[in-house]
Length: 313
Image 1: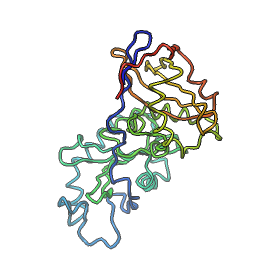
Image 2 (image 1 turned 120 degrees about the horizontal axis):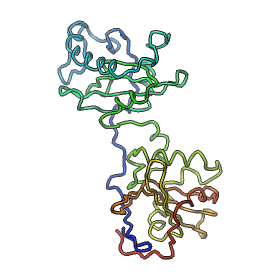
Image 3 (image 1 turned 90 degrees about the vertical axis):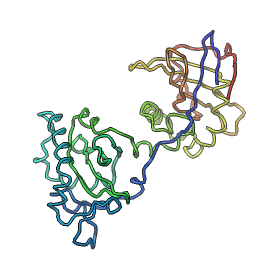
Image 4 (image 1 turned 30 degrees about the vertical axis):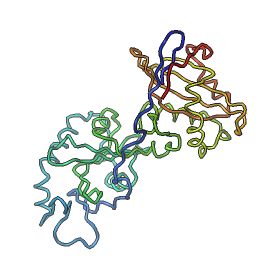
């Protein structure tokens, strides 16, 4: 979809696949890790052999044999942690319930990252969860079996160092609790549906200031499919602004006075590439609150009356 505004070509890009890639690992609640000392998760009624991943032949006759097999990977992750950790970070030995954190992180993670680069032998998964009472994050580096079960824990730690947490946010994000909570606003073709951090952050910021009696979340999808394209093609207002991080955001606003939903506006937020003026659609939302719409009326006002649609798809 390409348009001209005051001689500037604007092209809005809809993503081919609007979805966050997900792994089956988030479809089950992993059972508790029973033997923390050797980082082994045992199932009930497990036979004498220790099965980590039977499909791949990871079956061991003893815990020492198991530990010897994974020892190089454990040492590599522990070394990375020790070399990256700050001297003033949280001291795990002074946290009485530290080992208990592991169960909850595996059962209720905020993020799961699929990492197939750290080890050539097999992929690993990083489970991350904020721990509010400690003002930190708990990170568990795990092996996930072919049955989508975290069956071995290489290493786990707690930290207040965001840069250290970010080191373990690597690979593909296969589960994001924040995305689960805002999925109602994601529409195929936008960045929000792919779990894009910028889109998610801006969408969450909008939710914090919207009124409780605004358009129900249950109507976001239906109204989006009905009104999004019309808003971008025939906007009443278009605003361009640059945030503190240097992102150029262009907002399309359209009033729908005759719609069954009273006082309805539709707003579409895009990210502009400064060199090409190509715009990637971040997210869109309906609202009946003009004060919320006013929050998006800032920056450079690109008069929609002067817009000429050149082509669309």
